[in-house]
Each structure stands twice: as structure tokens, then as C-alpha cells.
Image (cartoon, rainbow, N blue to C red; front, side):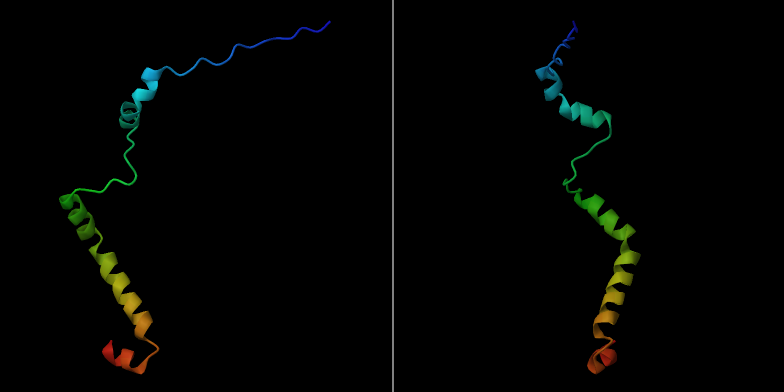
Length: 75
């Protein structure tokens, strides 16, 4: 005869562990993905990326107006 081994079901997660999700996220350095930065933080990010913003806008305008004669004059 063969023996059937029964494994006990996994223990349920206690409710206290589910309530402690913000602490778990903070412990691992996680933040809300859609959180907006503060105004000073946003201005710092813009200032840090100013060179990219200017280069991208110039490249986009050049590409947009390079085919039209008036656009070339405008550029």
C-alpha cells in the first residue's frame, strides 16, 4: 500500500502584517509612483534638465520647419 502525505495549509497572513504595509514600503525605500514633487523639488528637477529641454525643443523646431521655405527663413 502507498502512503499519502498530507501537508498542512499555509498559515494565513495576520491582519497586523497587512496594516503595516507603509512601514514595509518605507523600510525598503519605496515611494508612491504617482506622487508629485513639491514645488521647490520640481523647480530643481527642471533646472537640472534645462540643457536637455532646450536642445530637444530646438531639434524639434528645426525638424518641423526644415522642409518649408518660410520655415527655413523663420529658423
